[in-house]
Length: 338
Image (cartoon, rainbow, N blue to C red; front, side, top):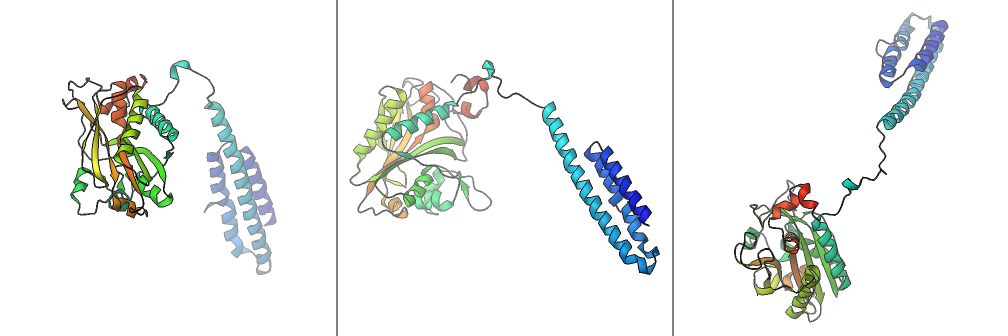
């Protein structure tokens, strides 16, 4: 039996040395350690060994099994590393090669978002971020929109199977911010939002916003208007015609709609402004006391203003883009213009 064991060991070592790939190695493993492999069959012959020699034979068999497993695993590692090196060499690409005609650039939405962040940080604001999948409480209830509130119909919502939702505005980032920051503070919250609504030249189901909030003592509408005029002047690099009209939003009181004169048609009327000459750009108002309370802020001591800037529409006005659907079309002819 010792001759058989030594012979199997020699055969195994020789076979492993000649294995050129992982597939060949697996065939060797089956030939020696499979159900009908040489070592397996030899171990089954223990019943034919004299009783006084069975213990010694069993020990030798187990040592051979361990040795075989160790040698096979070692060879597997060697062959795997060899195949990886061959693949890397055959598929190698020099990523440092510069091709001028393939130079990338930032999307127009990203460019203007960066510009807005620079403008607001120069005014003392800090930039906050948050998850795109939100809880119902942060997206609605903490913003003074309870379950039975009719204002929920204003924001058709994508719900997830676990009871959460895709945020319909970035105001929920402000909710998180109020719980972490102590007033006075000034924050903006840029990001992507989602609404289940019909798509046309000025509406998308996925778009971008920049929400903002200022909380301090004795905040008034005058502070709000001044900040918004500064923002628009810096973005458009000129004074733009605006109007402030009453608007209803549960999280502000009083609430306003800040519109700008349509820069696509010059105010004469087009599909973007729905022939009105004005584009709804910036819902805003003074923060509702219930929202401050939900954020752990005493409304008797502090007040604030908040706004929600439609980033897509701002970019459309900035660059004269007549259809919001271009932003997510994936058409390189569009993005290469910027």
